Image (cartoon, rainbow, N blue to C red; front, side):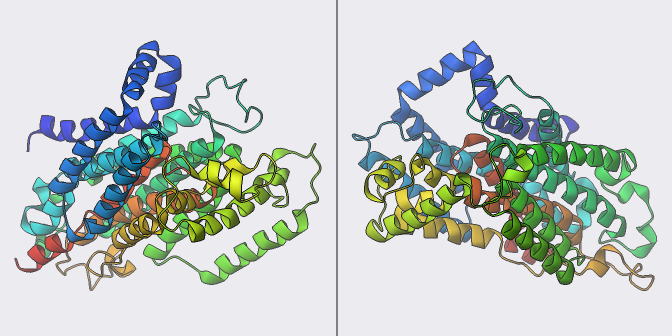
Length: 461
């Protein structure tokens, strides 16, 4: 494969995800993008139809049996859009859902085959570039670049000490920073773990530097430093976003990485959660309005948290009363009219993406989404190897190890980033916000790219 084609496979997905993630700043700062978006929204049904065609094409090109729940979700979302089109012609959530899935499948199509070829051709490992690694590093650099670049948001509702970066919502900014932090941590750990990764070649060739991958031969000492600096930048942005959902998501994502690499100590996790629970009890309802932001965010008795809890209860009641959903963009209206939300608290239902799916698309749509995500995260014993594989003993160094172990750091990294967003979607929404939705679907697809067919093919050779 030529270097120019490799570069194209990295640059094209990065360009697409950049437009999706930074679409809001392009819309607000560029008149051309503003006019282009207005033209698209003026014929939204045609936009949705075009996105549906693209989405269907990429699903077809990357089809596997695990995609059946996703196909069911897409069919339900399209049907719900056209059923309620006369009543609500601005159901942007449907378009964002389709666009996110399309981008994820496109990333899988363009760069996901690199992982499959590595598994299915263990003898040709030196011919397979780590395109996925370079793509993740490029994505990480974009997020790190945006962590300290802040637009003037003086007229925004959230204006104050909460950082928003290039977006108009600190929760979106916090979720992007949390996913970026998980990616940086995963890549850092992956760099260390590759020191023990060996190709499927005789032991005499293991020390040949020409058999290593580009990621491990070039910038061995510089890359970890860059990743560490990027992680620190995004950690600062995450802290000052004061997004509690992003904080929780980050903790879960890092615990997942610790578990994958055999470094998780449950007693320390229990102590940490115990201290957190104690802090919540101590701060509950005891923070004045003039208290600092970081103190008020610990008070779960304030309206910000209580409105979310009320919305969870109202959404469950709505799903009971409307098991097939109320239709796109009707959840807030129905909740406000029929389920007695707190004053000015009806919009809190949008802060939980899963309950939005269940109320707008019904229980079948929610089940399809959960089933697909569960299949993507299903543990594969061929991919999750013991920690000893990454740090081999003297007796293990002469053995021929599966090349699958070389790609576990990439899969674990993508899964940790997707898991961060999955947790944050429960508290802060984001599945129907283009920046976070696009990043989630990309990481979810790349995290599940190593399929059983590739492992079977490798085992037969």
